Structures are given as structure tokens and as C-alpha cells.
Length: 48
Image 1 (cartoon, rainbow, N blue to C red):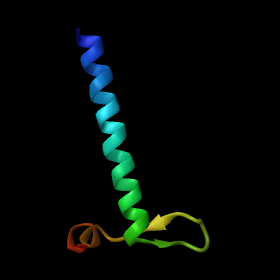
Image 2: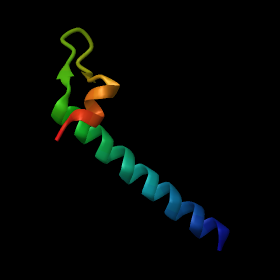
Image 3: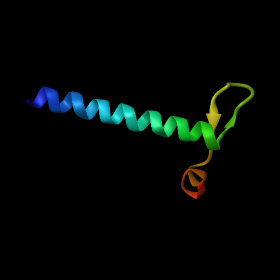
Image 4: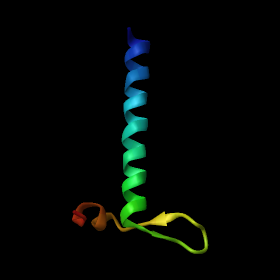
């Protein structure tokens, strides 16, 4: 039972991380040197 609960928790965390990554891509800017998307911590909470 514990193993299944841990697997479900891991899946939920992975889902939440993917939502966060997509949100950062939608509000952030792509760094021309690295190709990575960047935003400020404040913008994560100010965005509509």
C-alpha cells in the first residue's frame, strides 16, 4: 500500500512540475545564450 501511495505522490509531483514549467514558458522570456526560459519569482505570482 505504501509503494502505491508513493507512486501516486510521485506522479502528482511530476504533474505539478510540468504545469509550473509550462507556466514559466508562457510568462517568461527565452534566454538567447542558454535557450532556457527565465522569469522572476515575483512574476510567477503577479501574472494573471
